Length: 256
Image (tube, rainbow, N blue to C red; front, side):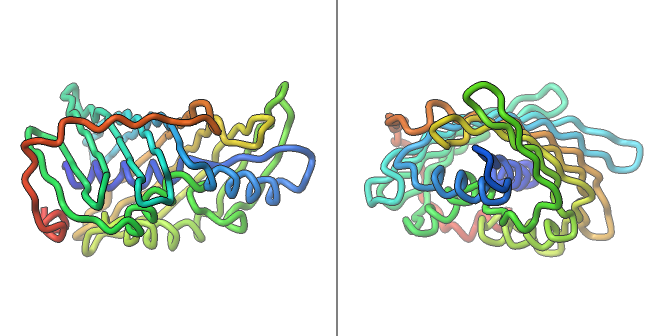
């Protein structure tokens, strides 16, 4: 269960952004907003994910809250801190993740582990969660824009067939894919907000999908609501206590 939850958290985080502004073609607006947000030197993102997983007659509700702070993005001094909680059937699991100086630290379920991670690999992971989900605008079937005060609202639907291939590739890039596990996207739509400066400030996406593994199918409905706090402002990242972490081979995580 822990592995599945981490996998879907990566997916949900990665599908959390989309936006537009002005009166240009919505696809162009999306690409411009995605590019501008990806160029930020620091970010503060809060994400809430609600999932309902159904297998046969059994239904499980999962809620995940994650606060992510990033500073000095795309530099050797990059620091990343993510803290959150996963709640399943009334039971809560706290998790903390931190990156600095080539090491990724994870504190969860009473275990503290760390492992070496190349900066470029870490940046690829961050890119997936901050650059408009890295979903090319060509994946979208429909995009409409409307003005809301100083903000612009982008409403969109996604081509489910194109998303199937994207999700498989995403899981591989994040290192959270599992052998024999495939995903089928049934439906995906969302809404995003961009402020007058052209930065994402909020995005919501709802996906209906199936996870297939070992001849078993789990139907899922996932709602993600992400808020980008004060985009464009400097973000301070304070390291947690890094004592007491056990160094492991990162390949060991794939076998859990």
